[in-house]
Image 1 (cartoon, rainbow, N blue to C red):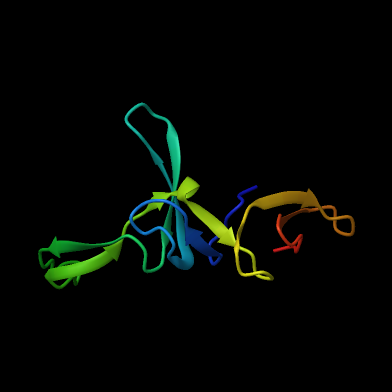
Image 2: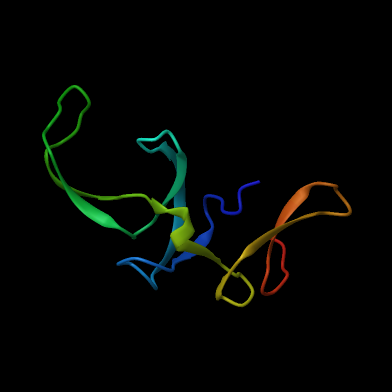
Length: 112
């Protein structure tokens, strides 16, 4: 079970964007040169870069300088506890009523 899901509010803990918060937009799985799978995440408003794009009339893309969000490693972000509004680790437990796995915040114990 994934500890983070799209739509979660996360805080960047390391890197040049450390301390900033945003919403998790996408989870990307990529393979490096050795074939090892890495999990990276795209966070809204974080790690923005400028890209010079040529116009492409067949795809309907206008040319110019555009800003896009690039993925960062999943180990550099932490979920924000909805109850305490601080970064927390995420745990997984089995719900007694439904028998399904649920995520919970380790600091407050609240289910997500």
